Image: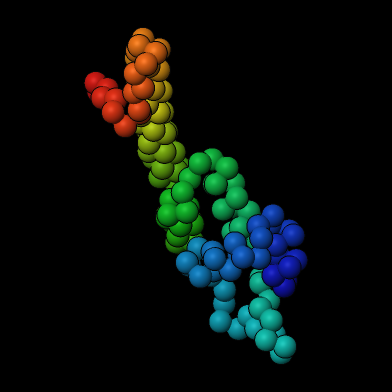
Length: 132
């Protein structure tokens, strides 16, 4: 399958597919060039791209996706390992949520400080100091 058809079937742009190939997220067999020097992508690449799309929609980073794909390729992605990867991602997301909530509370407190200031005094955001 040529890159245009692969792009259409996978939902990824040609540039994204080339980028994934460049960083080794998708791999092509050595004999993928046709006589006109076009790359002929096998169906396995489409399946990998669909897996990448699914994993991205679950919030995994490209590096995390690489690890999952490599594990799947070497048959090291059993149920126990899959649960461990999912649990680690959930913990990571919970930490991110906690940080974002902290930032939100700090900004709300900063807003309250600004509202309480005298009208003739302007407090810039860079002057504000918030408690952790």
